Image 1 (cartoon, rainbow, N blue to C red):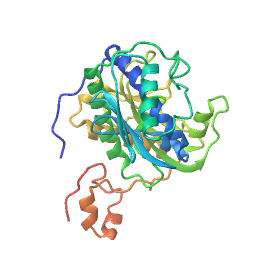
Image 2: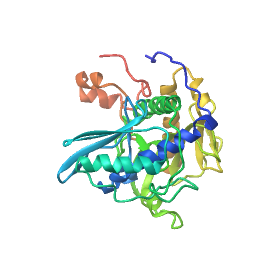
Image 3: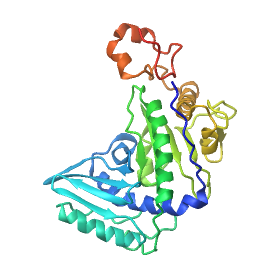
Image 4: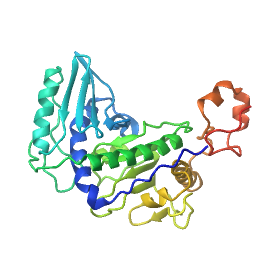
Length: 329
């Protein structure tokens, strides 16, 4: 059954851009710790989870301390939680440099080393390091809640879409560099990344994948919404249907785009995200040579706990594909 409808949040770029830029910088501080983790295909090691209160890193297990960092958008703070204790760093009016200094002090009290990099990444025209970013920024709790609501809604749809994929799939989460919510499906097929791209992008493109995600937009493309692409990009994407009214192929960007307001007009936005992602995956199968058997049944755990495997196999790609709960047996 569809979830109860709530008021769909309106995302106006001009009203959110300042806070998106602020949060993007803040989460990069903790995000740097993810670079110490073993590399996972598609940069799955760096994603931040969307939680009931904000964005959180994975658990880091270092010699002498185990910790996680939680940027609590709904509480206007950053919490460092470790086996050695916890510390809270407020988020308020001030500079990124001031926040960074307070974060380092709190981390040191817990026995946590500073991140190995000071660089601010993937943000155009920004200060080079956290310490050098002295721009005074204002924390807006209302905008922070809007950001969380959008990320939470998009994450629910992407997690539902991602669940039945049988291949490698990193956790659905926020990529702290570009600050987009991402779900990727990887195919074991080596590819040759373009040599003129940054090294981190080349290493993201070592194998074929499908990406579906959410972005708040930026100055050059200020509309929030869902995006998707296939790497390597196959021919024939023009003129296809993308599962949801309003979803279109943008050849200049190399992306399929579904505007946020059009998503909110659907009867069930979560299922619309699933339909959008399914249409992109179907294009990878039909045009990009992906195997057709990588998607399992889309059902809940209760169904799988009581249904014989031979029945599940027989229903693979059956008529109830795309529904959350097929009739019980």
